[in-house]
Length: 145
Image (tube, rainbow, N blue to C red):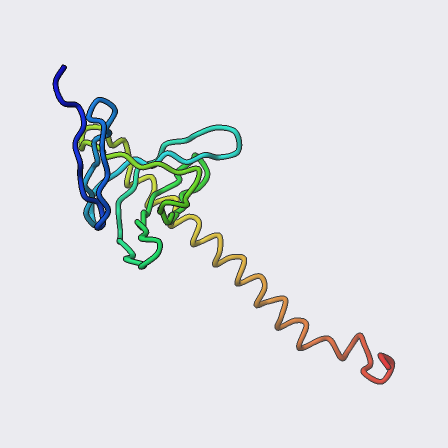
């Protein structure tokens, strides 16, 4: 039987690793395209994203991932912060041929969402102006005591 154990040093700590059950560690850098598996309620959904940063916190190093949650009615840019305490998220490398993102559709959805938000703001501004112009006509300040 060949030797299946090896001693490796991780962060100054020597660890004995059984090579029969050892996992391959993926290397990531900022800008890498990834798949992110997200637990949503009782199911898992996979999205495409990219690594946007590594936060080198002393006690909890964190990988920052940006991904698009795209559905028929909305496109949301989401961020997740992955570290040893993260739950409900996993990342994996992605090949270029796997990506199935319709950039034009997402762009159009963002533009539509922006226009809808502008309409809501415009409506609120009109109501505010009406309120400020007409409040005293309907409610006498002296009666509100």
